[in-house]
Amino acid sequence: MRETIDQEAYQLTDAARTAAEPDNDRQDGLAARPSQGYPSIARETVRMAISSLRPADSPRTTGENAEHTRLLAESRARLPPIIVQRSTLRVIDGMHRLRAAALRGEAEIEVQFFDGTEWDSFLLAVESNIAHGLPLSLADRTAAAKRILQTHPQWSDGAIGEVTGLDAKTIGGLRQSSSDIPKLSTRIGRDGRIRPLDGSEGRRLAGALLTEQPDAPLRQIARAAGVSLGTVSDVRRRIRSGQDPVPSRKRMTASQAGMQCAVPEAQRGGMTDPKASERNRRITLQKLRRDPSLRFTEAGRALLRRLEVQAVETEEWEWLLDSVPKHCIAAIVELAWGCSGIWKDFAVRLEQRERSNADASYANARTDHEM
Image 1: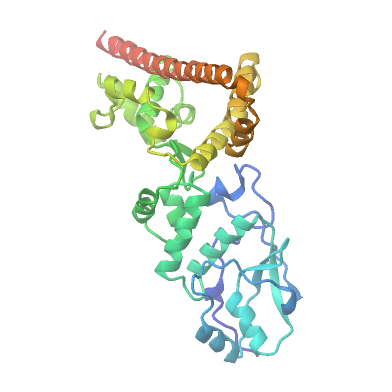
Image 2: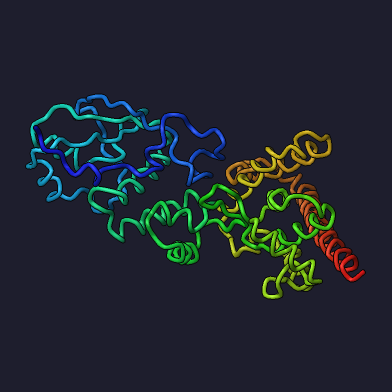
C-alpha cells in the first residue's frame, strides 16, 4: 500500500470545495459574496500533461520554496490533485506539487478544473494557501490584501481579512494608508450584505419605517433600511424611550451636514484620483440600474438616462475636449458650468429632503410617545 501525504494538510477550505453549481445570487461574481464560496471546482479529476500547464498567478511574492518541492519529490506519497483554471490552464493551487511531480520524472499530474474568472482564481489561491500546505508568509498575505483592496474596494475589512488570514484592523490600516483605494460609502460584508459606513442615515430610515409601520417585522425593517437586526432593535428601544435613533456620538450636526452638501463627492471622502472616482460612479450606477423602483417607473428611467450621460469615462472626456472647435469653447463652457450647477443643486435638495423626512418621522415618533 502506497503512503499518502497528510491529506488533511491539503484539504481545501469549505468555501473552496463548494461544489459544482455557481451561486447565481452573486453581484459581480465572487467579489460581492465572499462567504458564499467559489463558482465551480469540478469534483472529478483528470490527468493532464505537466508541459501543458501554465505557472500560477501566485500570491507567493518570492516564488516557490525549493526545499519544500524537494521534500515532496523525495517522498513516496501520492500527491493530491492540483487546481487549474480551465479557461487558461493556469495553476491556481499546487505549484509545489507540480514541480515535485516534474522532479520525479512524471509526465502527467492529476488536476481538478476550476471555472471562474482570473480574479476568482487569485482569491482562491490566497485562501487555499492559507488553509493548507506551505503557509503564506505575513508579507505574502499583506501583499495579497493590498491587491484585493485595489480590485475589490467594496469588500469590508472583515471579508478581506477572512480571505487573507489577516485581522480586520490590519486591513483597515492598509486601506487608510493607501491614497489610491476608492473611498466608498458602503461595504459588502462576509455575509454578502451591503452596509453603509455611516450608520446614522440607516438608523434614521429605520426609525422612520418603524414609525410608519409599527407592526412590521424587525427583519423587514432591517432589510429595507440596510441595517442589521440588532440595529433595528436598538432603534426601536431608543424611540420607545423618547431618544434620537442615532446616538449622539454618531450624530452629524446640521452645520456639518450643510458643509458636506456643498462639497463634491470626491472631496468628501478625501478622494482626488479620477480613476477611483470613475470606478465609484460605475459601481453606484450599476446598483441603481438594478433597482426596480427606478427601472419600472417612467421618472426613474428618465433619471437613469440622465445619470448615464453624466457617467462618462475619463478617456471619453479627453476625446470630447479635443473635439471642441475654438469658436464654440465659450458657449460650451457656459453650458457645462450651468449643468454642473443644476446637478449640484439637485444633489443638495435631495439630501435636504432626506434629512427633513427623517427628522419629521423622528419628531412624530417622539410626539406619539409623549402622548
